[in-house]
Length: 133
Picture 1: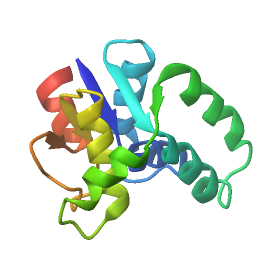
Picture 2: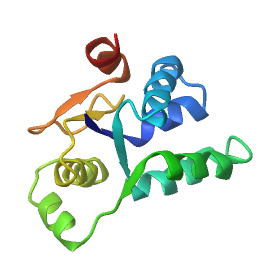
Picture 3: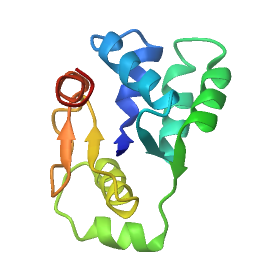
Picture 4: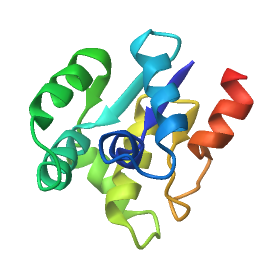
């Protein structure tokens, strides 16, 4: 199954946040190719920007992500579609449109306000409950 991973799932692991265990399980499952996972190119940039302020050697983690996940990017047509969606978080909307374009079945995000359109959006705990256990 193809899934889209939101930035906050990676940050949960890197920054040892509340959902670190669940997020780690999901990322490991993707790394082992149990799921075909993708993420937006901006996710790598956001991780570098946010995590490098709080931890060192983030580049090694970014290299692992780059090797283990499909990185997809936005282009003019993605932005055109995202502009048509009424949502306050434009970054989430762009990620949502990327997930649609990549034919993902689920978006995994611990952002309770992540845009919910036609795709299933699950928290890390919900994803584990439904698809791993």
